[in-house]
Length: 329
Ligand code: UT7
Image 1: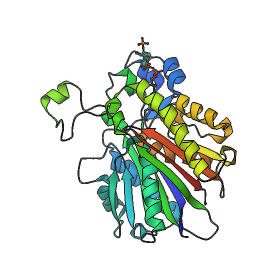
Image 2 (image 1 turned 135 degrees about the vertical axis):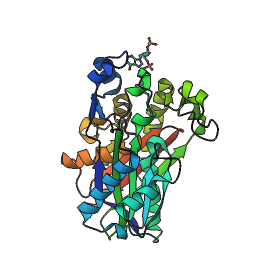
Image 3 (image 1 turned 60 degrees about the horizontal axis):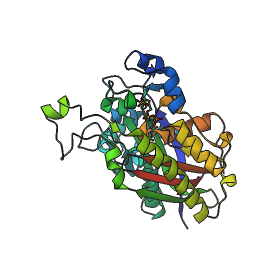
Image 4 (image 1 turned 30 degrees about the horizontal axis):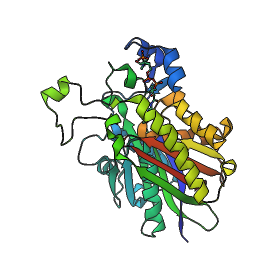
């Protein structure tokens, strides 16, 4: 049966770094609190002239350059984001135009922190259906545009960035996509959202005055759900494929909180060398954490052709997803 492989990666983060010490000057917080409660030391923040499509384009161009292929070969572009440049047209349209992907269709996928895993699932299925040969999945978010820098409970958590994978058909024996398990649970909507700016609460003087165009989160609720769900889905997917956690070479989880990642790894019995953790450098970049963590694993020589990789994420919605792949390059 035809399967799909990840064949290239590209990433982009804005140059400006916002450290915990910088945040100490902005809100009532400490480096120690942030580090102990989240694992974050610093995050990258886009300058005023940079929007989500700019970072997405940079990540996409890196993919094309590393594969040495023209943009015209891309057949579909999926941009996973909760911070599109604008409500419409989609960021995928802006990226398609900027990179010159003259043969592509595409769309934005809104699944917050699980976006990239959902995007990979869609891309894998487009390829396995035999209808597409080159699908670009991009996770890109400019979280700093929707953060309230007077709210210490949320502004310390997030950063900006983008990452992209190319998904293509796999040749016999090359590995690639093995399986996924994705879920939504909309009862979690009240606990992590951006209340205004949509059709329920369009922008008005009142929504601005009430600071409703920013991320609102009940951290503990989301934390408890994430710890339980990330482990449950990992375990269920591995069991479905008859794979024991010890066979996994790397768990590449969404980077929302070091404590969520450690709890998941511990329950799966995975030692730290099998878990990718780079939240200290980037914070939570929402849809971009998984490609950014994958890129770091590659640069550190921790991910090689043939390795079994488990991607896992939980986020606003609630959304949750896990994907099992055999690394193919
Ligand atoms: O990626 C999308 C999914 N999102 C997540 O997965 C995030 C899940 N949630 C979390 O990661 C954690 O809940 C947080 C890191 C957001 C918060 O950690 P926590 O251990 O749940 O802290 P908390 O919200 O229970 O707050 C504990 C205390 C509170 O003070 P009191 O009420 O005990 O006096 C907060 O006001 O910490 C206080 N606090 C802070 N203190 C210093 C909250 N934020 C800060 C801060 N600096 N930045």
